[in-house]
Image (tube, rainbow, N blue to C red; front, side, top):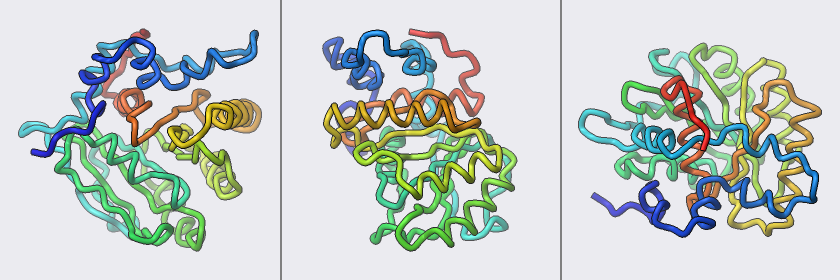
Length: 265
């Protein structure tokens, strides 16, 4: 099989010195030290699993003969979607937000899984389903923005309203540019439908510390003041450096009911 990317596995991260290890596993904590004194950091640490939970979660994302991870099918309409057999999470975001790269990073311990990427951003017109053993399904939604809003609305609205086994929606936001107008449209839709969701800031390796901190604080304030269904903690990820990937795997395992108790670190 292909060699794993550096830091894709938790065992590789644990060999790093402590501050680097913390920055990879808990990227939000790395930012905490740059906040003004007295800033409320409770929302930075709502989901802070210990090592045992992170290791248990990683096992779900590592395929073997008894635990296959497979691309199942694609759907352009809901009547093409696979049956409602397992708990499900879906990933949505703007066309160039790095959604396919993030899903590839999550599945990096199962390199045989093919995450399909449209050659032209905004032209992916299918909902792609990935089955993670007998535990849960991960769903890659079409990107929005560019010329996609109408396609997005027709397909994604139907999915969000009809998919009864959907446990959490992960809304990806570009960590360099923060919330955009199209992101607000997606948020309004999730809020209107009463869908529980989480915001994930992508490409954090490309953002300066100042820009990232500004975006994190602005989005956390927006979540606190203007949303009902959004989990109060942001998740920060880099699909290049694997920052936040281990924590996100753990959260996916948790919200799909496969890690019912997550002890704190």
